[in-house]
Image (cartoon, rainbow, N blue to C red; front, side, top):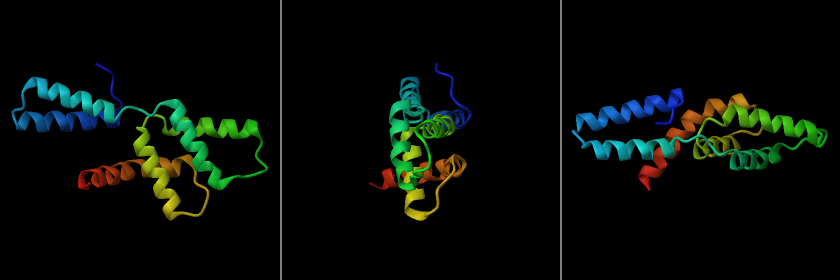
Length: 126
């Protein structure tokens, strides 16, 4: 069993409780847990870095050298890397649609749980 991050653990506990209340067979519960882990899997490094670079291009600062830009990217990846790529992308999209100022990693980090819920609701409605 893969160790779950704290926020993932809460989702897995809720899933287990729902399955137990509905008397789901163990094989169904195991399959649901595997699917939940995959959905909540931390973002792969390369796609996450690519998405952050594209996002930050909207806020380009020509005075920032390549070395500094690389360190900034590492900061962003370190702050957001534990979350699924789809949740990070949803938070970045929300920022772009609502804000004009350059964000900090913390500002996006604060949006991830809200953005993840919004993205989940949109997927369920589709």
